[in-house]
Amino acid sequence: MVDSKQIVDGFKSIQDEICSGLESLDGKGVFREDNWDRSGGGGGRTRVIREGNFLEKGGVNFSYVHGELTDLMRREMGMKGEKWLATGVSIVLHPISPMVPIIHMNIRYFELDDGREWWFGGGVDLTPHYIDVEMTKKFHNGVKSICDSFTNTAYDTYKKWADDYFYLSHRDETRGVGGIFFDHLNENTGKNKDEIFEFVCNVGRNFVPLYKEQVEATRNKGYGELEKQWQLIRRGRYVEFNLVWDRGTKFGLVSNGRTESILMSLPITAGWEYQFDPSDDPEAQKTLSLLKRDINWVDFDCESEGT
Amino acid sequence: MVDSKQIVDGFKSIQDEICSGLESLDGKGVFREDNWDRSGGGGGRTRVIREGNFLEKGGVNFSYVHGELTDLMRREMGMKGEKWLATGVSIVLHPISPMVPIIHMNIRYFELDDGREWWFGGGVDLTPHYIDVEMTKKFHNGVKSICDSFTNTAYDTYKKWADDYFYLSHRDETRGVGGIFFDHLNENTGKNKDEIFEFVCNVGRNFVPLYKEQVEATRNKGYGELEKQWQLIRRGRYVEFNLVWDRGTKFGLVSNGRTESILMSLPITAGWEYQFDPSDDPEAQKTLSLLKRDINWVDFDCESEGT
Image (cartoon, rainbow over all chains, first blue to last red; front, side, top):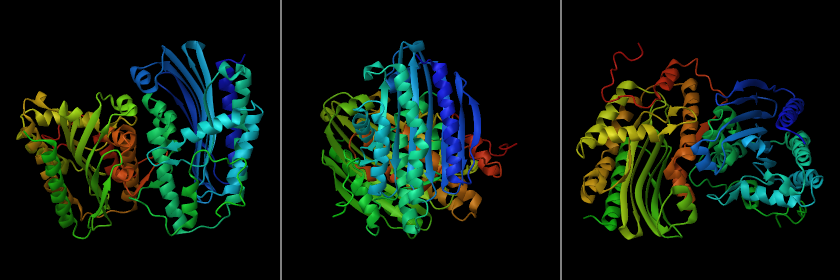
């Protein structure tokens, strides 16, 4: 069975693959790497891209950190034990154009007390500023085929989990069109550690092709001030989700993580307008109507949409 | 002794006074009022100002809300009992100019189970984008004189409380230069309910004069792109504090509060740059060096500053 060293190596390779894939896709932006050590144990490779052809700001982070459980972690995260170890790859990409979706991907492995407990987690989800139902259907079908190679219930289960996780209850809005989210995967899945690791790696290796399909369909679309204003508002919602509800961000901040790496997920700019009114932007209104949980995107009837 | 009805009326008057005081100070912006009801019980008067002469976005909110304790409130806020009631006035003002400080003020009253338990809370704190030590000293001396009319230990206690509360541990930075923060004030202060209410109202009534002194000293200062960029970064920090650490915001969001009123505290725009480097802005660097807890601002030696 795979051990934490092999998982670390696998995750590092995935980070490398994704960074070179994204650099080719962008055609201009180049990742800047910061290697860092964590005083409590471990470290990481933070890679940030800025001012690319279509990528405005993005991060592809690898980290491997470990330490002793603190009272804050026990209280805020409900963890039990003495020692913890976490490794993962985490990505958020913010495009320049409001027509290109924001995307997030994460794969992670967590261990308590040298493997007494272990689990994998991760997911990939898409946040279009403007929802295009055909592209969303393609995204969900792509994600489903990755899941289907793991178990035949994975997509349905993890899709629902994403709907519930990437949800801003204070807005009654989903963050975007979802995707998949999973956590605490261990033998309770009916799969062994190697098989779960392989699934998690598949999510990582399919990230660039999944996003490429979205980017190529949208990067040449035109837009103006109206769309840029809406993008600021949507980015504000993204910030709200990440800072208020995201457990990964919270874990990082309370476990004395590297703040600049954790918050690389935030956009270069975001905006908040009291009771923003998109009444002059029908596409924005349509988007709001689709930021809902439990939409069957895989079989979505794109023809009847909007009728 | 004052009852919740009288407290509600007192807080409403303070909201009125503050709004008219701010409109005069601004000279152009006018508050727009939204009256709202909360489905679980109570409601409020949200007042928002936009695009004034110096105020870019601000809110002066009054609310009076009540309901049954939910599991989420018990878990997230550590509250005990069946019923709760909360009323307060809450203010955040974001100026256009990076040379004018952001300010926050809040006064509140909370009751559990029809007064079985009650307490007051509140505070006022200043967040200059650029710290001017003389103006900060003036602010703290103004706040101290309000506190001194309550008890002779209030300023020291509540100033330290503000330092500890308005602190971004993930940045090791205070939000701004602090001020005062207090919570759970009841007979344990050695004062009775009427006396505590009077103190809290004094904080509210002195808000406009305190801010006016700051605004008049800074509103005509010049600035350029460098300062606007720094303002975006500081506003990003403000967003981080409010969404990650502020208990008031969290209480509002988890108690099914009115999101648009709670998040009126957020600026019209904010920004995040990976490892932002202010090396070309000595005043920004000086500001960072002063975003620390436990600075004695009341007796600050402005002459020796920076030497």
